[in-house]
Image 1 (cartoon, rainbow, N blue to C red):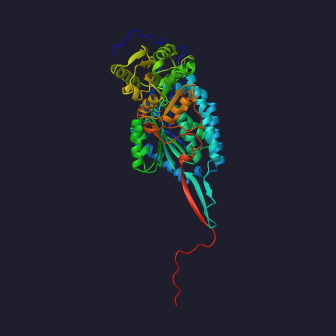
Image 2 (cartoon, rainbow, N blue to C red):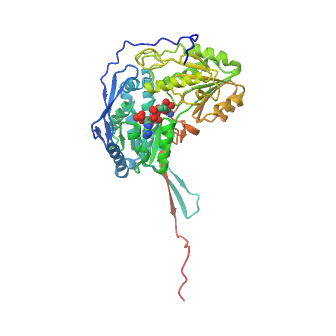
Length: 513
Ligand code: NDP
Protein backbone atom coordinates (compact mmCIF):
# COMPACT_ATOMS: atom_id res chain seq x y z
CA UNK A 1 0.00 0.00 0.00
CA UNK A 2 1.28 3.52 -0.69
CA UNK A 3 0.99 5.51 2.49
CA UNK A 4 -0.37 9.06 2.27
CA UNK A 5 2.15 11.20 4.15
CA UNK A 6 -0.33 14.07 4.35
CA UNK A 7 -2.44 12.28 6.93
CA UNK A 8 -2.04 13.36 10.56
CA UNK A 9 0.25 11.32 12.78
CA UNK A 10 -1.33 8.96 15.25
CA UNK A 11 -0.47 9.35 18.91
CA UNK A 12 2.98 8.24 20.09
CA UNK A 13 3.02 4.81 21.67
CA UNK A 14 2.65 4.77 25.45
CA UNK A 15 5.39 2.86 27.14
CA UNK A 16 5.42 1.76 30.73
CA UNK A 17 8.28 1.50 33.16
CA UNK A 18 6.17 -0.92 35.14
CA UNK A 19 7.81 -4.25 34.34
CA UNK A 20 5.21 -6.95 33.78
CA UNK A 21 6.88 -8.92 36.54
CA UNK A 22 4.85 -11.92 37.48
CA UNK A 23 5.34 -15.62 37.56
CA UNK A 24 4.01 -17.45 34.52
CA UNK A 25 0.66 -19.07 35.26
CA UNK A 26 1.03 -22.83 35.22
CA UNK A 27 -2.44 -23.94 34.10
CA UNK A 28 -3.76 -27.47 34.30
CA UNK A 29 -6.93 -29.05 33.01
CA UNK A 30 -9.79 -29.79 35.36
CA UNK A 31 -11.50 -33.10 34.66
CA UNK A 32 -13.89 -34.93 36.98
CA UNK A 33 -12.89 -32.74 39.91
CA UNK A 34 -9.15 -33.40 39.51
CA UNK A 35 -6.30 -31.21 38.22
CA UNK A 36 -4.57 -32.96 35.41
CA UNK A 37 -1.87 -32.80 32.73
CA UNK A 38 -2.58 -34.14 29.25
CA UNK A 39 -2.27 -37.88 28.68
CA UNK A 40 0.96 -37.38 26.71
CA UNK A 41 2.32 -34.63 29.02
CA UNK A 42 2.54 -32.08 26.13
CA UNK A 43 2.09 -28.39 27.01
CA UNK A 44 1.88 -25.11 25.10
CA UNK A 45 2.79 -21.53 26.09
CA UNK A 46 1.08 -18.18 25.70
CA UNK A 47 3.22 -15.06 25.30
CA UNK A 48 2.07 -11.51 25.97
CA UNK A 49 1.34 -9.77 22.65
CA UNK A 50 2.43 -6.52 24.29
CA UNK A 51 5.67 -7.61 25.95
CA UNK A 52 6.68 -10.90 24.39
CA UNK A 53 7.30 -12.78 27.64
CA UNK A 54 5.63 -16.07 28.58
CA UNK A 55 2.45 -15.35 30.53
CA UNK A 56 1.08 -18.84 30.95
CA UNK A 57 1.26 -22.45 29.84
CA UNK A 58 -1.31 -25.24 29.59
CA UNK A 59 -1.63 -28.93 28.80
CA UNK A 60 -2.30 -29.75 25.15
CA UNK A 61 -5.29 -32.07 25.51
CA UNK A 62 -5.25 -35.36 23.62
CA UNK A 63 -8.42 -36.98 22.22
CA UNK A 64 -8.35 -39.30 25.26
CA UNK A 65 -8.42 -36.28 27.62
CA UNK A 66 -11.38 -34.75 25.79
CA UNK A 67 -13.17 -38.10 25.92
CA UNK A 68 -12.54 -38.32 29.67
CA UNK A 69 -13.94 -34.83 30.21
CA UNK A 70 -17.09 -35.58 28.23
CA UNK A 71 -17.60 -38.90 30.05
CA UNK A 72 -17.16 -37.14 33.42
CA UNK A 73 -19.80 -34.56 32.51
CA UNK A 74 -22.15 -37.26 31.27
CA UNK A 75 -21.76 -39.32 34.44
CA UNK A 76 -22.23 -36.25 36.64
CA UNK A 77 -25.41 -35.41 34.73
CA UNK A 78 -26.97 -38.85 35.06
CA UNK A 79 -25.79 -39.89 38.50
CA UNK A 80 -24.57 -36.75 40.23
CA UNK A 81 -26.51 -34.55 42.58
CA UNK A 82 -26.24 -31.30 40.56
CA UNK A 83 -29.34 -31.57 38.36
CA UNK A 84 -31.42 -32.66 41.36
CA UNK A 85 -30.37 -29.93 43.79
CA UNK A 86 -32.93 -27.35 44.85
CA UNK A 87 -32.74 -24.14 42.84
CA UNK A 88 -31.94 -22.36 46.09
CA UNK A 89 -28.93 -24.61 46.65
CA UNK A 90 -27.60 -24.08 43.12
CA UNK A 91 -28.13 -20.34 43.59
CA UNK A 92 -26.13 -20.40 46.85
CA UNK A 93 -23.19 -22.02 45.05
CA UNK A 94 -23.36 -19.59 42.10
CA UNK A 95 -23.31 -16.68 44.55
CA UNK A 96 -20.25 -18.22 46.22
CA UNK A 97 -18.58 -18.30 42.78
CA UNK A 98 -19.40 -14.60 42.35
CA UNK A 99 -17.68 -13.94 45.70
CA UNK A 100 -14.70 -16.02 44.58
CA UNK A 101 -14.30 -13.88 41.44
CA UNK A 102 -14.57 -10.75 43.57
CA UNK A 103 -11.69 -11.95 45.73
CA UNK A 104 -9.47 -12.54 42.67
CA UNK A 105 -10.23 -9.51 40.48
CA UNK A 106 -6.62 -8.25 40.59
CA UNK A 107 -4.97 -11.53 39.62
CA UNK A 108 -7.56 -12.43 36.99
CA UNK A 109 -7.50 -9.02 35.34
CA UNK A 110 -3.69 -8.98 35.15
CA UNK A 111 -3.72 -12.36 33.38
CA UNK A 112 -6.49 -11.27 31.02
CA UNK A 113 -4.60 -8.09 30.19
CA UNK A 114 -1.32 -9.91 29.57
CA UNK A 115 -2.86 -12.70 27.47
CA UNK A 116 -5.21 -10.55 25.37
CA UNK A 117 -3.20 -7.29 25.20
CA UNK A 118 -6.19 -5.27 26.46
CA UNK A 119 -5.72 -2.37 28.92
CA UNK A 120 -5.42 -3.56 32.50
CA UNK A 121 -8.03 -1.04 33.71
CA UNK A 122 -10.50 -2.36 31.12
CA UNK A 123 -9.75 -5.98 32.05
CA UNK A 124 -10.45 -5.09 35.68
CA UNK A 125 -13.86 -3.67 34.71
CA UNK A 126 -14.72 -6.80 32.76
CA UNK A 127 -13.66 -9.25 35.46
CA UNK A 128 -15.56 -7.24 38.07
CA UNK A 129 -18.56 -7.17 35.70
CA UNK A 130 -18.62 -10.96 35.64
CA UNK A 131 -19.61 -10.95 39.31
CA UNK A 132 -22.97 -9.50 38.30
CA UNK A 133 -23.49 -12.17 35.62
CA UNK A 134 -23.03 -14.95 38.19
CA UNK A 135 -25.33 -13.15 40.63
CA UNK A 136 -28.00 -12.68 37.98
CA UNK A 137 -27.79 -16.37 37.03
CA UNK A 138 -28.21 -17.23 40.72
CA UNK A 139 -31.44 -15.24 40.81
CA UNK A 140 -32.73 -17.17 37.78
CA UNK A 141 -31.75 -20.50 39.36
CA UNK A 142 -34.50 -19.83 41.92
CA UNK A 143 -37.12 -18.32 39.65
CA UNK A 144 -36.96 -20.31 36.41
CA UNK A 145 -39.74 -22.87 36.45
CA UNK A 146 -42.11 -24.81 34.27
CA UNK A 147 -45.83 -24.26 33.83
CA UNK A 148 -49.15 -25.78 34.82
CA UNK A 149 -52.41 -25.84 32.81
CA UNK A 150 -55.62 -26.06 34.82
CA UNK A 151 -57.66 -25.12 31.76
CA UNK A 152 -57.85 -28.48 30.02
CA UNK A 153 -61.15 -29.73 31.47
CA UNK A 154 -62.17 -31.27 34.76
CA UNK A 155 -60.42 -34.56 34.10
CA UNK A 156 -57.03 -33.22 33.04
CA UNK A 157 -54.15 -31.29 34.54
CA UNK A 158 -51.17 -30.42 32.34
CA UNK A 159 -47.72 -29.86 33.83
CA UNK A 160 -44.76 -28.62 31.81
CA UNK A 161 -41.42 -29.32 33.45
CA UNK A 162 -38.18 -27.60 32.56
CA UNK A 163 -35.37 -30.10 32.86
CA UNK A 164 -31.65 -29.54 32.18
CA UNK A 165 -30.90 -30.13 28.51
CA UNK A 166 -27.95 -32.31 29.51
CA UNK A 167 -24.23 -32.04 28.83
CA UNK A 168 -23.30 -28.70 27.24
CA UNK A 169 -20.11 -28.06 25.28
CA UNK A 170 -18.93 -24.46 25.66
CA UNK A 171 -16.34 -23.03 23.26
CA UNK A 172 -15.14 -19.50 23.95
CA UNK A 173 -12.91 -16.99 22.11
CA UNK A 174 -9.93 -14.85 23.12
CA UNK A 175 -11.40 -11.33 23.07
CA UNK A 176 -13.37 -11.39 26.36
CA UNK A 177 -12.33 -14.71 27.91
CA UNK A 178 -13.96 -14.61 31.35
CA UNK A 179 -16.86 -12.38 30.32
CA UNK A 180 -18.03 -14.60 27.47
CA UNK A 181 -17.66 -17.72 29.60
CA UNK A 182 -19.74 -15.95 32.26
CA UNK A 183 -22.48 -15.26 29.71
CA UNK A 184 -22.84 -19.03 29.31
CA UNK A 185 -21.60 -21.16 32.20
CA UNK A 186 -23.57 -19.81 35.19
CA UNK A 187 -26.83 -20.05 33.23
CA UNK A 188 -26.12 -23.63 32.15
CA UNK A 189 -25.30 -24.46 35.77
CA UNK A 190 -28.42 -22.70 37.05
CA UNK A 191 -30.44 -24.98 34.74
CA UNK A 192 -28.77 -28.07 36.26
CA UNK A 193 -26.63 -28.93 33.25
CA UNK A 194 -23.09 -30.27 33.31
CA UNK A 195 -20.43 -28.82 31.03
CA UNK A 196 -17.19 -29.26 29.15
CA UNK A 197 -15.43 -25.96 28.47
CA UNK A 198 -12.80 -25.26 25.82
CA UNK A 199 -11.27 -21.77 26.08
CA UNK A 200 -9.22 -20.20 23.29
CA UNK A 201 -5.66 -21.49 23.35
CA UNK A 202 -4.55 -17.82 23.45
CA UNK A 203 -6.39 -16.94 26.65
CA UNK A 204 -7.02 -19.95 28.87
CA UNK A 205 -5.82 -18.61 32.26
CA UNK A 206 -8.97 -17.12 33.72
CA UNK A 207 -11.07 -20.11 32.63
CA UNK A 208 -8.69 -22.39 34.53
CA UNK A 209 -8.65 -20.03 37.53
CA UNK A 210 -12.43 -20.06 37.52
CA UNK A 211 -12.30 -23.84 38.12
CA UNK A 212 -10.42 -23.23 41.39
CA UNK A 213 -13.26 -20.92 42.37
CA UNK A 214 -15.96 -23.45 41.39
CA UNK A 215 -14.19 -26.16 43.35
CA UNK A 216 -14.05 -23.99 46.47
CA UNK A 217 -17.65 -22.87 46.03
CA UNK A 218 -18.79 -26.50 46.16
CA UNK A 219 -19.55 -27.39 42.53
CA UNK A 220 -19.37 -31.21 42.59
CA UNK A 221 -16.78 -33.19 40.62
CA UNK A 222 -17.59 -33.73 36.94
CA UNK A 223 -20.13 -30.90 36.72
CA UNK A 224 -17.69 -28.54 34.97
CA UNK A 225 -14.63 -29.81 33.13
CA UNK A 226 -12.02 -27.76 31.28
CA UNK A 227 -9.91 -29.02 28.39
CA UNK A 228 -7.16 -26.82 26.94
CA UNK A 229 -5.59 -26.90 23.50
CA UNK A 230 -6.31 -26.15 19.87
CA UNK A 231 -9.73 -25.64 18.33
CA UNK A 232 -9.90 -28.38 15.69
CA UNK A 233 -8.52 -31.16 17.92
CA UNK A 234 -9.99 -30.16 21.30
CA UNK A 235 -13.06 -28.11 20.37
CA UNK A 236 -14.48 -30.07 17.47
CA UNK A 237 -15.41 -33.19 19.51
CA UNK A 238 -17.68 -30.94 21.59
CA UNK A 239 -19.80 -30.42 18.47
CA UNK A 240 -19.89 -34.06 17.46
CA UNK A 241 -19.72 -36.37 20.46
CA UNK A 242 -22.88 -38.39 21.09
CA UNK A 243 -22.88 -37.56 24.80
CA UNK A 244 -23.01 -33.78 24.18
CA UNK A 245 -26.59 -32.47 24.07
CA UNK A 246 -25.98 -28.80 23.30
CA UNK A 247 -23.17 -26.70 21.86
CA UNK A 248 -22.78 -23.06 22.83
CA UNK A 249 -20.09 -21.31 20.77
CA UNK A 250 -18.79 -17.75 20.52
CA UNK A 251 -16.25 -16.88 17.85
CA UNK A 252 -15.94 -16.40 14.14
CA UNK A 253 -18.81 -16.96 11.73
CA UNK A 254 -16.57 -19.34 9.76
CA UNK A 255 -15.91 -21.72 12.67
CA UNK A 256 -19.41 -21.20 14.11
CA UNK A 257 -21.09 -22.31 10.93
CA UNK A 258 -18.74 -25.30 10.62
CA UNK A 259 -19.42 -26.44 14.20
CA UNK A 260 -23.13 -25.57 14.02
CA UNK A 261 -23.40 -27.76 10.91
CA UNK A 262 -21.61 -30.68 12.57
CA UNK A 263 -23.71 -30.40 15.74
CA UNK A 264 -26.97 -30.09 13.78
CA UNK A 265 -26.17 -33.25 11.84
CA UNK A 266 -26.21 -35.00 15.21
CA UNK A 267 -29.46 -33.14 16.09
CA UNK A 268 -27.92 -31.26 19.00
CA UNK A 269 -29.21 -27.90 20.15
CA UNK A 270 -26.89 -25.12 18.98
CA UNK A 271 -26.36 -21.58 20.27
CA UNK A 272 -23.98 -19.40 18.26
CA UNK A 273 -22.72 -15.88 18.99
CA UNK A 274 -20.72 -14.84 15.93
CA UNK A 275 -19.34 -11.81 14.17
CA UNK A 276 -20.73 -8.40 13.32
CA UNK A 277 -20.24 -5.41 11.03
CA UNK A 278 -22.17 -3.07 13.24
CA UNK A 279 -23.30 0.30 11.90
CA UNK A 280 -23.58 3.47 13.93
CA UNK A 281 -25.97 5.69 11.95
CA UNK A 282 -25.42 9.42 12.39
CA UNK A 283 -27.98 12.11 11.53
CA UNK A 284 -27.16 15.84 11.43
CA UNK A 285 -29.45 16.69 14.39
CA UNK A 286 -27.64 14.48 16.93
CA UNK A 287 -25.75 15.56 20.06
CA UNK A 288 -22.41 15.99 18.25
CA UNK A 289 -19.95 15.62 21.12
CA UNK A 290 -21.66 12.58 22.61
CA UNK A 291 -21.79 10.96 19.16
CA UNK A 292 -18.10 11.59 18.34
CA UNK A 293 -17.07 10.14 21.70
CA UNK A 294 -19.26 7.06 21.19
CA UNK A 295 -17.98 6.50 17.65
CA UNK A 296 -14.36 6.58 18.84
CA UNK A 297 -15.18 4.39 21.84
CA UNK A 298 -17.29 2.04 19.73
CA UNK A 299 -14.55 1.20 17.25
CA UNK A 300 -11.41 1.38 19.44
CA UNK A 301 -12.73 -0.33 22.57
CA UNK A 302 -10.80 -3.60 22.97
CA UNK A 303 -8.72 -2.48 19.94
CA UNK A 304 -11.79 -3.21 17.80
CA UNK A 305 -11.48 -6.92 18.63
CA UNK A 306 -15.09 -7.05 19.64
CA UNK A 307 -18.08 -8.70 17.96
CA UNK A 308 -20.06 -5.55 18.79
CA UNK A 309 -17.43 -3.18 17.43
CA UNK A 310 -19.00 -0.14 15.73
CA UNK A 311 -16.74 -0.67 12.73
CA UNK A 312 -18.98 1.10 10.18
CA UNK A 313 -20.31 4.59 10.60
CA UNK A 314 -23.06 5.63 8.22
CA UNK A 315 -23.11 9.44 8.14
CA UNK A 316 -25.57 11.72 6.44
CA UNK A 317 -23.83 13.06 3.33
CA UNK A 318 -24.39 16.69 4.39
CA UNK A 319 -22.06 16.22 7.39
CA UNK A 320 -19.76 13.46 6.14
CA UNK A 321 -16.62 15.61 5.74
CA UNK A 322 -17.10 17.51 9.01
CA UNK A 323 -17.64 14.17 10.73
CA UNK A 324 -14.48 12.60 9.20
CA UNK A 325 -12.34 15.52 10.34
CA UNK A 326 -13.78 15.49 13.86
CA UNK A 327 -13.37 11.77 14.28
CA UNK A 328 -9.77 11.85 13.01
CA UNK A 329 -8.97 14.68 15.39
CA UNK A 330 -10.35 12.70 18.35
CA UNK A 331 -8.97 9.31 17.26
CA UNK A 332 -5.38 10.48 16.78
CA UNK A 333 -5.20 11.41 20.44
CA UNK A 334 -6.54 8.17 21.95
CA UNK A 335 -3.73 6.68 24.10
CA UNK A 336 -2.32 3.51 22.51
CA UNK A 337 0.33 1.31 24.02
CA UNK A 338 1.39 -0.80 26.95
CA UNK A 339 -1.78 -2.33 28.42
CA UNK A 340 -0.32 -1.96 31.91
CA UNK A 341 0.02 1.82 31.55
CA UNK A 342 -2.75 3.46 33.60
CA UNK A 343 -3.72 5.78 30.72
CA UNK A 344 -3.86 3.11 28.03
CA UNK A 345 -7.12 2.88 26.08
CA UNK A 346 -5.98 0.76 23.11
CA UNK A 347 -3.57 -2.04 23.94
CA UNK A 348 -1.87 -4.68 21.78
CA UNK A 349 -3.45 -6.76 19.03
CA UNK A 350 -3.91 -10.33 20.21
CA UNK A 351 -1.59 -12.07 17.72
CA UNK A 352 0.70 -11.48 14.75
CA UNK A 353 -1.80 -13.35 12.53
CA UNK A 354 -4.60 -11.05 13.60
CA UNK A 355 -2.44 -7.96 13.02
CA UNK A 356 -1.48 -9.11 9.51
CA UNK A 357 -5.13 -9.90 8.76
CA UNK A 358 -6.20 -6.38 9.82
CA UNK A 359 -3.47 -4.71 7.74
CA UNK A 360 -4.56 -6.79 4.74
CA UNK A 361 -8.13 -5.55 5.15
CA UNK A 362 -6.96 -1.92 5.31
CA UNK A 363 -4.95 -2.45 2.10
CA UNK A 364 -8.00 -3.90 0.38
CA UNK A 365 -10.07 -0.84 1.31
CA UNK A 366 -7.47 1.60 0.01
CA UNK A 367 -6.96 -0.45 -3.17
CA UNK A 368 -10.73 -0.29 -3.76
CA UNK A 369 -10.59 3.52 -3.72
CA UNK A 370 -11.41 4.45 -0.11
CA UNK A 371 -9.36 7.22 1.52
CA UNK A 372 -7.05 6.50 4.46
CA UNK A 373 -7.43 9.44 6.86
CA UNK A 374 -5.54 8.18 9.91
CA UNK A 375 -3.33 5.27 10.92
CA UNK A 376 -3.13 2.17 8.77
CA UNK A 377 0.33 1.14 10.05
CA UNK A 378 1.76 -0.94 12.84
CA UNK A 379 3.90 0.89 15.40
CA UNK A 380 7.63 0.29 15.22
CA UNK A 381 7.81 -1.42 18.59
CA UNK A 382 8.38 -4.80 20.16
CA UNK A 383 4.71 -5.40 20.91
CA UNK A 384 1.89 -5.93 18.39
CA UNK A 385 0.41 -2.43 18.11
CA UNK A 386 -1.64 -0.84 15.35
CA UNK A 387 -2.40 2.83 14.86
CA UNK A 388 -6.06 3.77 15.28
CA UNK A 389 -7.27 3.86 11.69
CA UNK A 390 -9.97 5.92 9.97
CA UNK A 391 -11.00 5.36 6.36
CA UNK A 392 -13.54 7.62 4.62
CA UNK A 393 -15.28 7.55 1.26
CA UNK A 394 -16.15 3.89 1.72
CA UNK A 395 -18.76 2.52 -0.69
CA UNK A 396 -21.24 -0.08 0.60
CA UNK A 397 -19.98 -2.71 -1.83
CA UNK A 398 -16.33 -2.54 -0.72
CA UNK A 399 -15.06 -5.42 1.39
CA UNK A 400 -14.04 -2.92 4.10
CA UNK A 401 -17.75 -2.00 4.41
CA UNK A 402 -18.97 -5.60 4.58
CA UNK A 403 -16.41 -7.87 6.25
CA UNK A 404 -15.63 -8.07 9.93
CA UNK A 405 -12.09 -6.72 10.42
CA UNK A 406 -11.75 -7.20 14.18
CA UNK A 407 -9.27 -4.38 14.63
CA UNK A 408 -9.16 -0.61 15.33
CA UNK A 409 -10.39 0.36 11.86
CA UNK A 410 -13.31 2.68 11.20
CA UNK A 411 -15.05 2.79 7.81
CA UNK A 412 -17.07 5.94 7.06
CA UNK A 413 -19.92 5.50 4.57
CA UNK A 414 -22.18 8.42 3.49
CA UNK A 415 -25.96 8.02 3.11
CA UNK A 416 -28.64 10.25 1.57
CA UNK A 417 -31.81 9.69 3.64
CA UNK A 418 -33.25 7.47 6.36
CA UNK A 419 -34.33 4.66 4.06
CA UNK A 420 -30.96 4.70 2.31
CA UNK A 421 -29.24 4.43 5.72
CA UNK A 422 -31.39 1.43 6.67
CA UNK A 423 -30.74 -0.23 3.29
CA UNK A 424 -26.97 0.19 3.62
CA UNK A 425 -27.07 -0.97 7.26
CA UNK A 426 -28.87 -4.16 6.24
CA UNK A 427 -26.73 -4.86 3.20
CA UNK A 428 -24.25 -7.19 4.91
CA UNK A 429 -24.41 -10.81 6.00
CA UNK A 430 -24.32 -9.74 9.65
CA UNK A 431 -26.95 -8.46 12.08
CA UNK A 432 -25.51 -8.26 15.58
CA UNK A 433 -25.95 -4.66 16.72
CA UNK A 434 -26.46 -1.09 15.51
CA UNK A 435 -26.82 2.44 16.87
CA UNK A 436 -28.73 5.49 15.78
CA UNK A 437 -27.78 9.07 16.64
CA UNK A 438 -30.51 11.72 16.32
CA UNK A 439 -32.60 13.97 18.54
CA UNK A 440 -35.72 13.15 16.55
CA UNK A 441 -37.62 10.27 18.13
CA UNK A 442 -39.28 9.42 14.82
CA UNK A 443 -35.91 9.00 13.11
CA UNK A 444 -34.62 6.89 16.03
CA UNK A 445 -37.62 4.57 16.07
CA UNK A 446 -37.76 4.22 12.28
CA UNK A 447 -34.12 3.17 12.21
CA UNK A 448 -34.40 0.98 15.31
CA UNK A 449 -37.34 -0.90 13.80
CA UNK A 450 -35.80 -1.11 10.34
CA UNK A 451 -32.28 -2.42 10.97
CA UNK A 452 -31.48 -6.13 11.10
CA UNK A 453 -29.80 -6.29 14.50
CA UNK A 454 -30.22 -8.16 17.77
CA UNK A 455 -29.44 -4.97 19.74
CA UNK A 456 -30.04 -1.35 18.75
CA UNK A 457 -28.60 1.46 20.84
CA UNK A 458 -30.27 4.87 20.62
CA UNK A 459 -27.96 7.81 21.37
CA UNK A 460 -25.51 5.53 23.16
CA UNK A 461 -23.27 2.57 22.32
CA UNK A 462 -22.06 -0.73 23.81
CA UNK A 463 -24.04 -0.62 27.06
CA UNK A 464 -25.05 -4.05 28.34
CA UNK A 465 -27.08 -5.54 31.17
CA UNK A 466 -27.61 -9.17 32.20
CA UNK A 467 -31.38 -8.54 32.09
CA UNK A 468 -31.31 -7.78 28.36
CA UNK A 469 -31.05 -10.57 25.76
CA UNK A 470 -28.00 -10.50 23.49
CA UNK A 471 -27.44 -12.17 20.12
CA UNK A 472 -27.61 -11.69 16.40
CA UNK A 473 -29.74 -11.78 13.29
CA UNK A 474 -28.54 -13.49 10.07
CA UNK A 475 -24.89 -14.64 10.07
CA UNK A 476 -24.30 -13.08 13.50
CA UNK A 477 -25.68 -16.10 15.25
CA UNK A 478 -28.41 -18.37 16.45
CA UNK A 479 -30.22 -17.89 19.75
CA UNK A 480 -29.85 -15.33 22.51
CA UNK A 481 -27.81 -15.18 25.71
CA UNK A 482 -28.71 -13.33 28.93
CA UNK A 483 -32.17 -11.98 29.67
CA UNK A 484 -34.77 -13.75 31.77
CA UNK A 485 -34.83 -16.69 29.34
CA UNK A 486 -31.09 -17.32 29.72
CA UNK A 487 -31.58 -20.37 31.92
CA UNK A 488 -34.52 -21.71 29.88
CA UNK A 489 -32.19 -21.90 26.88
CA UNK A 490 -30.31 -24.67 28.68
CA UNK A 491 -33.46 -26.71 29.38
CA UNK A 492 -35.76 -29.15 27.63
CA UNK A 493 -39.47 -29.07 28.35
CA UNK A 494 -41.26 -32.21 29.37
CA UNK A 495 -45.04 -32.37 29.23
CA UNK A 496 -46.87 -34.41 31.87
CA UNK A 497 -50.60 -35.04 31.40
CA UNK A 498 -52.40 -36.09 34.57
CA UNK A 499 -55.81 -37.70 34.24
CA UNK A 500 -58.24 -37.11 37.11
CA UNK A 501 -61.10 -39.50 37.93
CA UNK A 502 -62.58 -42.28 35.79
CA UNK A 503 -61.22 -42.47 32.23
CA UNK A 504 -63.72 -43.02 29.38
CA UNK A 505 -62.86 -46.15 27.43
CA UNK A 506 -61.95 -45.88 23.76
CA UNK A 507 -63.74 -49.17 22.98
CA UNK A 508 -65.50 -51.85 25.00
CA UNK A 509 -65.75 -55.47 23.87
CA UNK A 510 -69.37 -56.63 23.32
CA UNK A 511 -70.76 -58.64 26.25
CA UNK A 512 -71.09 -62.31 25.41
CA UNK A 513 -74.79 -63.21 24.86
P1 NDP B 1 -12.28 -18.73 16.03
O1 NDP B 1 -13.69 -18.75 15.67
O2 NDP B 1 -11.31 -19.52 15.22
O3 NDP B 1 -12.09 -19.20 17.56
C1 NDP B 1 -13.10 -19.18 18.54
C2 NDP B 1 -13.01 -20.45 19.39
O4 NDP B 1 -13.23 -21.59 18.56
C3 NDP B 1 -11.65 -20.66 20.02
O5 NDP B 1 -11.80 -21.33 21.27
C4 NDP B 1 -10.98 -21.58 19.03
O6 NDP B 1 -9.94 -22.32 19.62
C5 NDP B 1 -12.13 -22.47 18.65
N1 NDP B 1 -11.96 -23.13 17.37
C6 NDP B 1 -11.28 -22.72 16.28
N2 NDP B 1 -11.40 -23.62 15.28
C7 NDP B 1 -12.16 -24.63 15.76
C8 NDP B 1 -12.63 -25.87 15.24
N3 NDP B 1 -12.35 -26.26 13.98
N4 NDP B 1 -13.38 -26.67 16.03
C9 NDP B 1 -13.68 -26.29 17.28
N5 NDP B 1 -13.26 -25.15 17.85
C10 NDP B 1 -12.52 -24.32 17.09
O7 NDP B 1 -11.79 -17.28 16.08
P2 NDP B 1 -10.27 -16.79 15.99
O8 NDP B 1 -9.76 -16.85 17.34
O9 NDP B 1 -9.46 -17.49 14.97
O10 NDP B 1 -10.52 -15.35 15.41
C11 NDP B 1 -10.71 -15.19 14.01
C12 NDP B 1 -11.79 -14.23 13.73
O11 NDP B 1 -12.99 -14.63 14.37
C13 NDP B 1 -11.54 -12.83 14.25
O12 NDP B 1 -10.75 -12.11 13.40
C14 NDP B 1 -12.95 -12.32 14.35
O13 NDP B 1 -13.36 -11.87 13.09
C15 NDP B 1 -13.75 -13.52 14.75
N6 NDP B 1 -14.02 -13.61 16.20
C16 NDP B 1 -15.24 -13.27 16.64
C17 NDP B 1 -15.52 -13.31 17.98
C18 NDP B 1 -16.84 -12.90 18.52
O14 NDP B 1 -16.92 -12.53 19.68
N7 NDP B 1 -17.90 -12.98 17.75
C19 NDP B 1 -14.51 -13.70 18.97
C20 NDP B 1 -13.26 -14.09 18.39
C21 NDP B 1 -13.04 -14.04 17.05
P3 NDP B 1 -8.42 -21.83 19.47
O15 NDP B 1 -8.36 -20.38 19.82
O16 NDP B 1 -7.73 -22.66 20.45
O17 NDP B 1 -8.08 -22.09 18.04
